[in-house]
Length: 182
Length: 428
Image (cartoon, rainbow over all chains, first blue to last red; front, side, top):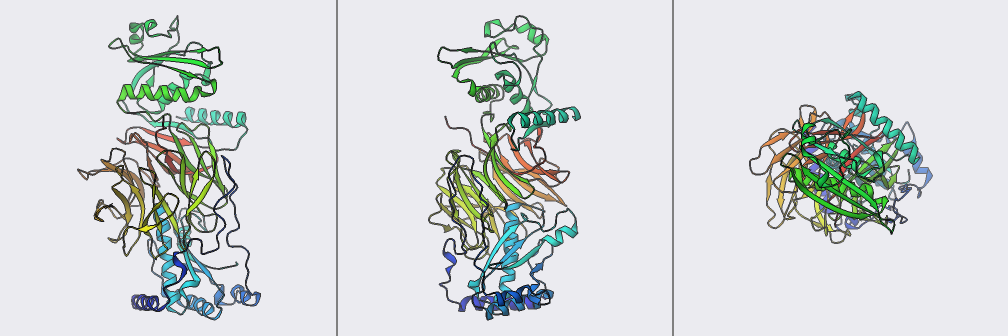
């Protein structure tokens, strides 16, 4: 596994060098986030916004993503405590998504990192981010374009499973692959 | 303790029904005292409304809550003194009081009220301070907090924080709210409501704005919101995650953690979000920046050494120094206002605890027992640390004095409370 990771890191570095550096990573709001300013008023504000909804792409290709028999329906990569190492067993799943992204040039994904409830909220945002970036490195190694992948982190803020035991924690140490329009 | 808890619940229920509001009002309970609390008598002010609406009862509640004072009964002293010259020192000494507060509230022709108070040292038999305020009845509470601040400073030598405000986040079901309330928990105002998580509220140094992180667009984005107008702007909404805002002492600069260039790294930007500049380059996580009071350096958390530890970056030279060495998890540094040390969270086995470290001696003092203590916020006088913990699976706020002796619990009914942030001293 270690060898795989080192190879992944090396190829990721090479791919990073060869892609055009003009990717829009420096722009504010490249992900179609809603307008920042809400209605004024002292005790603002029903800020619930739609976020990623809308803008569905071709339905034919979306079905492959939803087909429960397809490996593409596997969307979660799990991690050990305090770790951001992508285990080998997730390789086929990540490879399938890399292939899908290569074959569907309009597809965009967000990798959402998550952590268990232990520790600093802000540090956990960074830890979840590191997990999302680790999955991204593997995707890019396997042929996905850097620019179609955004990595973000929920830290420990959105546990999929409530509870204070290892079963809940293991479920929450996770990166989810979410396609734009889902 | 049980009785005071029931008491607190009854009080909260009363507030809820009278205000007919679903806001999460915090009530503060003392769970551990200083042991050497100063006995003080607060005589009901002549002419003030009776009961909890009175100025003197708010002053008494403030001082008691600090854990540094205990109230001496005032019943049966006839006539009730309201001026310095009426205070019979011997009678108060016989009740065990070291100090006595007297005062009055006199309506003026213009509808305002003249509030006078005096603090008398009955041991030395000398007046310590006397002041007069002309206010509207709606300002009684605020005036009482000011009086408590004056008494606290006279008696302890440190400025009081009874006139300050706190911010915190509540979670009820899937609804998150950012609230601002007086330091005693009263008058909670909802600043933001969202169905996605909110975190990291940070007061601007002048108390007019709050920076925070909202996930409302399905990713962490840093906003700055003006408290008076409610207007806000996304100041960091870059590709990736935007988190952990911190204000410079002059309020012009924000430190934030961005991932736009890969990895969680520290940036400084103007407070409106313009001109973000990466401050250094590291291979690991750098986050949780906090400016030192002189603005010349920032404390931050990094895993560059293999485990999360606290470091200091000097902004002029770029020099980085590791500050914590004991244990494998030391995070969330919060400098004290005197610049001599910082509060932080440490993990001991599986327990997360609040601790303080002195810069000069590197001595660490653990203040709390955990198990899930997090998000410390130091009061502007440096004497109390507000933090979040969990009791019975529910998030509550707690406070501990920076010497570890006084402990308070801030409870809101049926709500998860987290992410406390103590606001600055009010500007005159």
